[in-house]
Length: 188
Image (cartoon, rainbow, N blue to C red; front, side):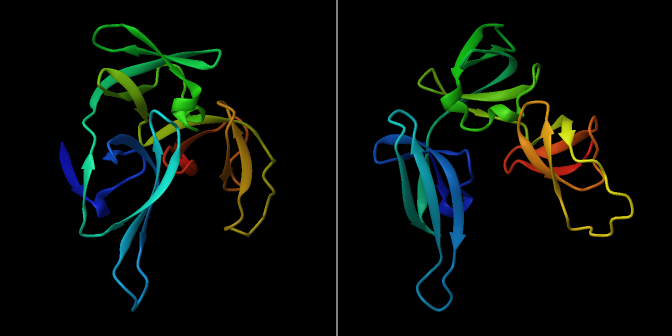
């Protein structure tokens, strides 16, 4: 097992804590000025039981990372509540339930390459690429001569998710979306 500093914990990491494997859902660095030291506030979900917990780690504390075997796979299609992936080396197909994807399904398009993590030969999570290119299927029209550069408008994308985009983005355009935060990055 590999130990990492608490400050290196990121969303999506798998940790071994309390003799169980946990997926990190949120990770915040907290520093209260003048009172005590800084710490990492980590929200985690138990892979098997599905329970959530919040844990505080001192910034100098070491945390056990779970051993995972990453496999390169390709997303093929959705079959009811399951998502079908294909191993790029063996061409075996694998069904992963929607509950395991936890909000990542909105970034999956057919033929997208992803990394599926296995723990003890069991799939435990999907790691998406840092960004994906999606097509805007519905958004409000652009208002000519609008000078408010900080205003954003909602845009529905081809996978069904909605993100906030700048006013110059129109229906039919392809945009790059950050998969960690689900936010607009740029035109594609």
